[in-house]
Length: 163
Image (cartoon, rainbow, N blue to C red; front, side):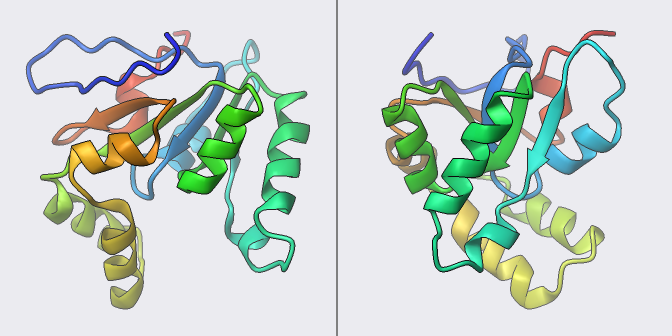
C-alpha cells in the first residue's frame, strides 16, 4: 500500500511487514539483531550499515548505488533511515518502509543504546537524530510506509518471517 502511513498502537493486533524490499530503520530497532538471528534459506536479507559510506566524500550517492546493487541480490534490505536516502529511493521507484520508535520511547531507547555498548555522547546523538513527534517522522518520510514501534517491540516483532 504505497504511501500509507500507519501507527501500531499498544494492544492492537499487529499487521506484519512482508520480508521484501527496503526497510529503513532508526538505531536500536533491531536491524542487526534480526540479521544475527535470521535463519532461512528462502529469503536473502542484508543489513547495510551506512557508517562506512558516510565517511566518503561521495555520500549519499555511494550509499544509494550500493543499495541498488544489493537490491538485485537480496529479497530484503535493511538500511539506515536518513530522510534524503529514503526520499531518493522513493523517487527512483522503490517502496520503502520506515520503522521508527514511538515518540514516547526515548528512555527505553537510551537504555537499549547503553546496553549495546554505545558511548554516552553517541547515545545522545542517536536520541537527538532519531526522535521527533510521530507526525514529524511521518512528514520526514512522506511517500513511504511509516511504522512506529511501541514499548518493548523490535523489528522482529513486526516482520512476517517464515517459521
